[in-house]
Length: 398
View 1 (cartoon, rainbow, N blue to C red):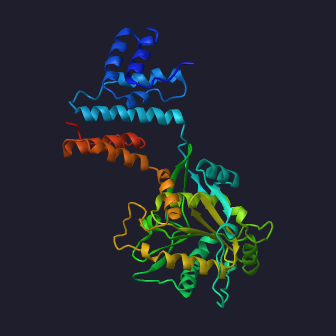
View 2 (cartoon, rainbow, N blue to C red):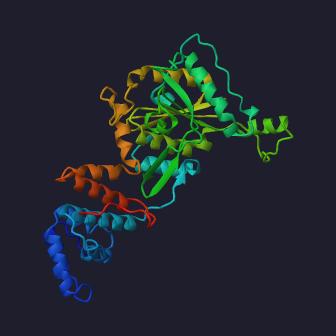
């Protein structure tokens, strides 16, 4: 088995050892000269493919012309080499282009996601129990049987969330919170392993000034609504004039049915948001709360509305200091406890584009002029992004 070169010298030696029938002598000289200008770290990336047969193809990227004959700076040329390497690495890793909807994630797939991210799912009532205040009145359930489906019932359910949280002591309105209907708002796109996932929540608690388009960044509580087959059957019985699909087995909704979806959604939400958040999977009668603490995914399965809303209210009230007038939080606030900060920082890299942002920020600091910065930013974007129409043009390098 051929060992991967780890330095520039080893990379050049490998090139000279390749048979002339594979890489001709003239090309070997050009490759050796090109590699001599690289650092050890960059040279190693030309040998990142698992199969040695692919190394030659990656190395041949160095033989391609830098551009269309227009002069470009050395920084741009090096950046172009980097982008060519990235494209080769993406092809080698076989990343799936099509996103998987959160709603299509199975329980088994959720188990794999947790394993890949080194997170442990635990019973919240056993690991971190909470108590409902003594003497409070029971909160009524939400009647989903009044609506033909989840989408139709979500606006009313969002108003119900607002009413119950406010009754439990959460400040709503200016300098407080509001509950948004988000069931038609695109929110999360993440990569875990070699797969991409996308989706959102049906409703969400956010600081009062935040609009739906920015809810993903400052979400505090997400609601995922599920109408049980029992409620569907009741609506069908009460509205025989409305065309509906046949309900096979009328029953209450269980956590197991939506577990894959909400686990994936919670991970994605923490990757996008810089504040701790909870997720509530509910059919209006039962509430299943999920939250990340340290390396634990805590699940409070089968909460009553009274338990759920008082616990969510307590969470919002205790985190009230996290409200910000700037509504821009680049890092988790320093005052957060470590078990709240850790999952946010750990999952940040799942967001599509996070690596792109890090690369741009790390390279632009070496630019000697604003012009070079603009050219580099365009070069990075055009090689990370999908193919664009020919009619779209980028600024000419100078």
